[in-house]
Length: 248
Image (cartoon, rainbow, N blue to C red; front, side, top):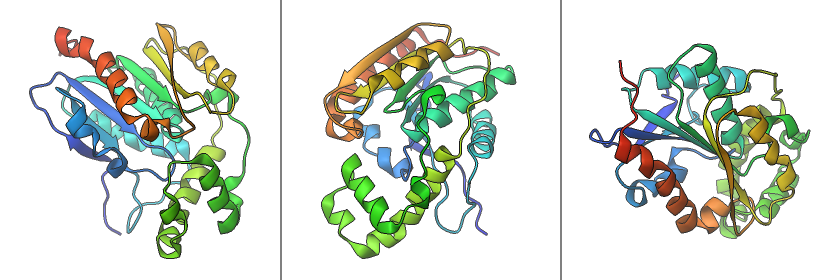
């Protein structure tokens, strides 16, 4: 079995005090965010990159979060900001919770995007669906070009990845824990099902919380790319100017 790092550098900026750590959506990878390197200025960007081929398979959110935490601990010290979309939002929260429990330097901000709060996730079993049912679900969700959905060879490769990630999130169980002393931003699409399932994120954090709405469905981070990155750039700019990197 080939060793696979759970983190991948997207934009390395040794001069920047700020690092954005990206947690992808189900079926996503670091490659899903490669364009961010040219449009987010003056920050380093690292993405979680779950192994897909010839690598370790994860079925547990707890195990994945534990091992991602261990990899982040090895990174050079910077001011960290977490961004997670959909499944990635839950993973980002779990990693931050481990940091808190271990008394490690916390991210200064978490951006949770396109996800209900861990306390309000709807129980689903999509990972047990047939390939046809899964394709129909992905079509309704948006974010995947129709030509990809219609390509049987590509879908034969992609569907096992999405099915595995769906199992991770659908078997996840939230455990009550202290509020995290971290600033929170909630990103939500105007065509998403129910914004009220996202609002309880605020109950899990003890510092400032705000919500930003973007036109579009679940994959507004693609359809409203410029607006989303403009907001992320704004949220990171304060830390770039003030350099709040943890001091040793």
